[in-house]
Image (cartoon, rainbow, N blue to C red):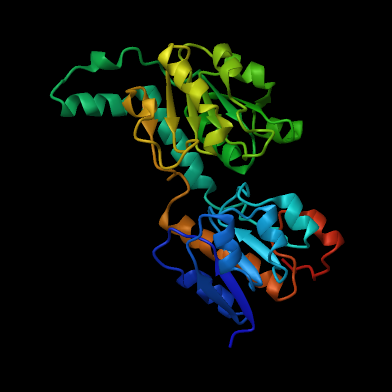
Length: 332
């Protein structure tokens, strides 16, 4: 019998072999589940030492119902599925993976920007309909000299900034938590959110989803944008007020959008965005490459293994928990 029990609340992966390999190093058994509700998580993880989490809710109710739980590790950078305050109050360590898929997401954001700016999807669709005419894409503007506004300037948008600058695009950013020196080192100008909306030709969203960022880009912001503006989102759908976005597109307040994430996923079949030629939609795929998936799976599991072995994980999110949970520091 294994020393520890780890439950994966839900997953979309074809194999869990990397997680099992990592957890075997601390004699932990991985139990598979596909939970959608709080009660399903509580039932599946009632005696678990650790939880691997993708989308299932790890709410206060869940955390207060699992007295044996020591650690929750979430696949990804964001931790919006976990009630962080409740985890800390219940002495549960929360881990994520902050440094994976930086190239994948920044590449994908730029690919969406290019697809929208050069209208490659529109042109492709027209050619396949039998219409060989570039004029269906009018107007297209030169990228060089245009302005990319980054909503958020963490690791992924910092990577994107360098790629955009290589195309001659000027980069500005809104992020009240980033030191000015970091922006200066990247040759990125920090601005207010209103200034970002007013000055940008392209806006790429990269903020985590928190109550303070939910609906960050809404009706007011769209009204400030240029009519030629294109908005890209590879972060979290609810950071953009989707109804305000739809209205802005319908009213011609902005020119287009490239969206890898939406408020509701999968997208509802009656969503107006599906019928807009100036909108490129992807199924929350920006994070994916074969290399990134393996890295994510191993690092997410390693957070659990670290805690069960008596160490703070490398990717400790709720650092306040150190006040009550005393573990050893890793030498890395």
